[in-house]
Each structure stands twice: as structure tokens, then as C-alpha cells.
Image (cartoon, rainbow, N blue to C red; front, side, top):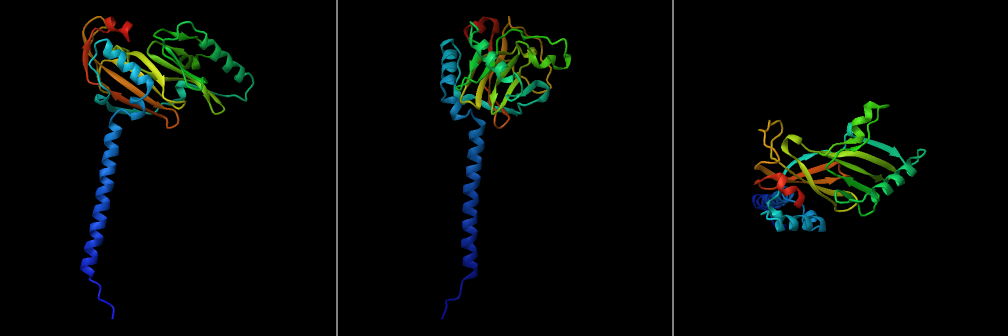
Length: 246
């Protein structure tokens, strides 16, 4: 004869399995959330980040990679701030190659960073760049870059993209001090600026007087249309005294 199934005991075992599985899943999800709140490992271990943070420490900054925390997440693609051209269109490929050559020949490459493929670059020079287009004022803002703008230019699949990929807040005394590629799809732009919350009106504090600042590491993912902003602990400096050392 078949032994009678102990229904209560079976239900208890099933409940235990479900509870265990749920606990494992929640622990995993929590761990992923914790990990995402910190600077990604691929950034922390990259040559670009290690060079950047070592330079800061040598200049007297007390800063560690594990103190950065995720502050906010933004999308990067904005049609009002970018232009897209097909390489199949007449003259586009030639213009693209000419612009790459032009930027490679710029004497001071300190604020220009090329991707590993050499088919994309970032221009974050602290000066006004680009040209006014009086014949097409609607697109003027797209191609005129101020010191608080970062230009991205490059080939993505069969499209040439030019974009103001990032802008920072002048009232926060912002300054882009470094940029580097992790690979051909992900790059990091380092910003030093006064900390503020969205919509906050900042009290005046010039670059020539002591102000509270933070470093903000923008981890930009071109494939996922993502700008993850990781912020350091605050510190006080006179920015004009430190800019040359960045």
C-alpha cells in the first residue's frame, strides 16, 4: 500500500524552499543595489581613473575611490544638442576624416581625448570653441561650445555624431579636469564644482576665494544612453589655486 502523504509537512517544506529562494533573491538584489551605488569596478581599476586619482593625491587631496556615491542618473542624447549624419551622404565621410585629422594635429592635446578606436574624441578645452552659423541660427547653439561644455564627435555604426554630450553649471564654478575612455562605448568625464541640489540657488562664491567643492565622475554609456554621476565627499579649496595642478 502507498504511504499516505503528509500534506502539512509537504506544504511546510515547500514554504521553506520558497522562503529560502526569496531570501537569496532579495540578498542578491540588495547586493546589486549596493554595488550600483558605488563607482563601477571597471572605472575604478581603469588606467585613466588610477592616473587621475594618483595625481590628486600627489597634489594634497585626501580622496579615495570607495567614497564616491551615485548621486543621479541622466540620459545623454538630446536632439537639441546633437547632430547626426549618415556616412553614406555626399561629403560626410570626407568631412569626418578631415575633422579627425584636424583634432589630432592640435598642438595642446591636454583637453582632447580620443577613444581606443581613434574614431571618436572628447573636447573639453576650457575656452569657447566652434563657429557661429549666421545662415542657420537655429543650429548655432549645437556647434558653439563654451568652457562649461564637452563636445563628443565620432563614428557610431554608420552615423557621424556631434553632440554637446555634457554641460555643467557655471554658477557652481564648474571645471572639467579630466576625461578618458574605458572602451569605445563608455567614457568618464571628471568635473569639479560646488555641490548643489536640483533647483537650488547658490550663494555667490568666486573661484578666487575658499569654497566647498566636490568631484563628480560622469560615467557615460553611449549604448545605454546613460550618464551616471558619482560624487565625492566635499572639501574646501580656492579653485583658481588648484586648476593648473589638475
